[in-house]
Amino acid sequence: MDRLEERKIILRRFFWSDRQLYQLGRLAGIEWFNIFERKFSRDEYAYFAEKEKREAREHILNIEDDTKFIEVLNDPSVQPKYALTIDRFIGEHYFYDKSAGFEPSDKRNILREEVRGALEDTKGRGYFLLKAIIDLEKEGKWDRAYGGATWVDILAKTRQLKGRYPSPRDLAIIRSYKIYYKTGSRRYPTHTVPKEMIPTINDELEKCKNAQK
Image (cartoon, helix red, strand yellow):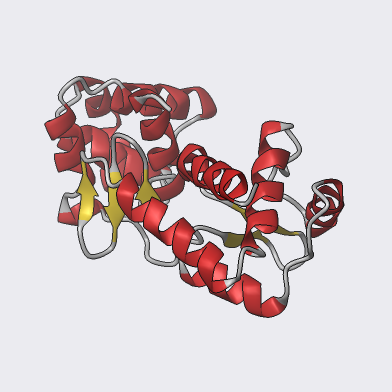
């Protein structure tokens, strides 16, 4: 996954509100955002029109200096809300957790260890849950509104993989490693592997599969 795609995921996950985008743009010193100063300073419910929001995102995504990009993300005035469903980011180019903030670093070694730990603790059974979710994403079968795969699709894919269905205990174990999240809503629940983690997790799953041959 390239740097720009990772930036897009970061904005969607942590800075999705119009006011957050406005604050990021102002912190970065992007002149385009100046025309909205009066609007956002006078109205706490101010928002961008649909076209304006797309343009706001593009301006922030195109910040050339990576150091500056990270600096504005970590500014105390515009921190991610901690009620997030997926509360961290581990990609090739960027890393985030609550204690460290955003870093322009590759910490996928942490993710690899977590995948191996989850597979070991579930005696390999976690393989089929993670593989099913990832395969469904590759096939374009994640829910368009909420992201992630439905439980019905996961069970069907698990059968196709000739695997065992995950037990409640296995689900709890894998969730504790923060490589799998329950997403969606109460009425329409979905199950997700964070997109930036998919290449690394899938690579570890393939290593596990090959080791068992």
